[in-house]
Length: 474
Image 1 (cartoon, rainbow, N blue to C red):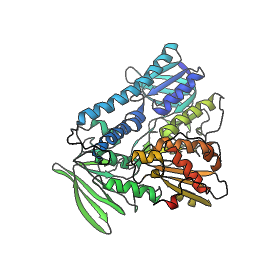
Image 2: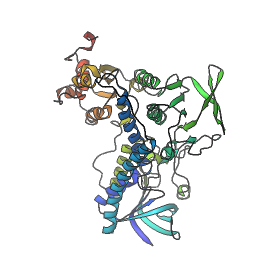
Image 3: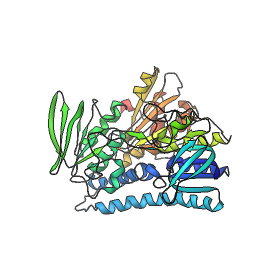
Image 4: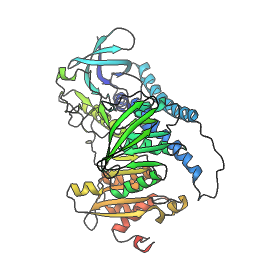
């Protein structure tokens, strides 16, 4: 029987990151992957959909009328777009496989394509794609099996007319009339992507009074306004009453204000959250505790069985971000082998929503600050008050800082809504991570012209020392 220092179940972002950290310690690792290396982070999530978003954003520039040019003709090749996305995902996977191959040749890492289940706390039964099942044992285990899209019980997914984020690459053409069920981040991102292209109409249905209701109203108002300009119709305070899939099309009803409006669509995207992949692992057999939702209950990545750890969507932290999954995996491996340098910290978690415009954040928003009982201060600063924002001809974009209520406050959170938002937010995440005060942010020599100057001016405004006084600018 093969014996390893560490066995990792799942070869997505978390599993790969954990394997590479174990390689730093020269540990012998078995990496078991059910489908393909890279998982949802590459093929059905971050990389694939964000490549789509980048291409849509480039296409969107064709129709700007304030840049000194006019586009008189264009052609959109859906197949070519799909090939570009495939090339991006294939290149990323090739980078991962190249590293795996290197350590396989050294004899440190075994890659197995297949599934596995625990038969005892230190032993797995492996079911390879080819060949007979066999058993292995390990000192430690990392479960990184990720998650999958949640489905609706009475709406069968065929991957063509009714699909989830897992089926984006299987589409053969743009959906002319798309109903998006669910207006969370994934639903809004796909609405953004598809509505950018001509001939695509998108409808979204949200129970709350606005999309992305967990974000502040000024953020969601700008996103909603920009989506509306791109042929996206948003029903708020509404829900889907019924969906009927017929040979001649899709019929559905929208319940709003006690009335049902009958509508039609050509395609339906189901985007109602994700569920963890914990079935079939034999976790109950060895005493690993699960939450009612099926997530593995953890304490700093460690499960109820001390030598078994988790990372990513499968655990009960519920962050759902690739960067968190990678960090958790690295931290878990460091804990296993006594190499922890610092505690796992989520307070400075930063994220991106690939919408129109791009939205990025770190820390608390105003709603969350109020809910936590903070006495806080907030300042909002428009992109157009920065030289780079003016050069980019941005409209409506802004930064917002939320701080503690004291003369030289700490930063509680930040939102950037506009181009390059994700690049900007990293600066604030670093300030939060190292518990620096607002005056420290004001002293950093930012490059010029850069949008990060806007964050700095926002901080100066809170301290009463802004160069450009927003209250004096119309």
